[in-house]
Image 1: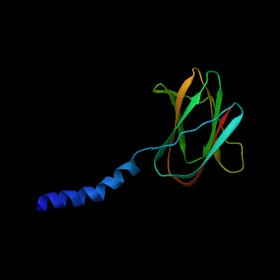
Image 2 (image 1 turned 180 degrees about the horizontal axis):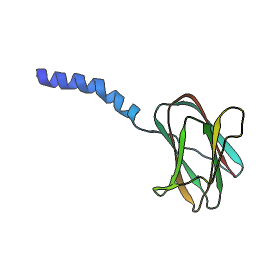
Image 3 (image 1 turned 120 degrees about the vertical axis):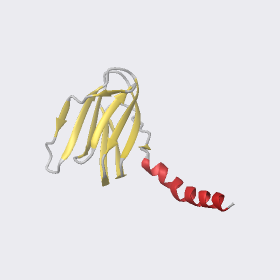
Image 4 (image 1 turned 90 degrees about the horizontal axis):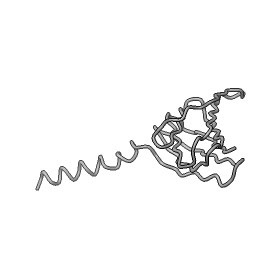
Length: 122
C-alpha cells in the first residue's frame, strides 16, 4: 500500500509537466488570398500551426530574429526562397511557394517571452 501511494504521489507531480514539453498546436485559418493572421504570445520551446494552403500560393512568415521557422507538407520540409531583414528592428521574413494543395505545418522553434509572428497568404 505504501508503494502504491508513493507511485501516485510521484505521478501526480510529473504528469502535469509532460504536456508542457510537447509542441503546442494552434490552427490557422486564412479565408482568402491577401490576408494575414498574427500570433502574439509566449513561445517556450516549439509551436506548430497547421494551415490549409492551395497550390501556387505565396506564404510569408515574419518572426522575431531569435525564432526558427520551418514549413512542411506531407512530412517534407519546404525551403524558403527569400530571407530579408530590412527593418529597423531585427526580424526575419520567410517566403514559401506552395507546390501542392493541402495541409501545411508551420513549426516555430525557440524561446521568446513576447513573440509576434505574422502569417500572410498572397
